[in-house]
Length: 169
Image: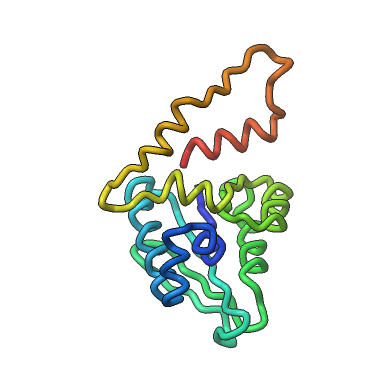
């Protein structure tokens, strides 16, 4: 599986990363990359993070590596959304997109790729490397029940495939 992460979208959806981003943009990016590197060590998924460089970026798209994660900054005049759409057309079903941007989510569905909301991914998969657990999240997950029976309540094939990909996270 190839995770394609909308970098600034995840930062701005996360309360803890958002605080760092307000103080220093670079600190927010570094904190996100550190959390993703920790996640990558646990999951061994290929991860690409895309950041916007359309207003203050270089004239060419720049690529960098951070602890095995490919980091892409879009070129000046090009939004990260366009880079993500390009990656989606290349990866198709292998891709899982992390974004809250509805346009990218629709593009992912058209490419038969799965997507997960940025806030949901951050809260459920990007844990502090120190291992601090969130007791409220654990209590919420134990009280919910989605037990369904019979074919009449079966999800559509597309939604079942999406859930299978999300389970691999």
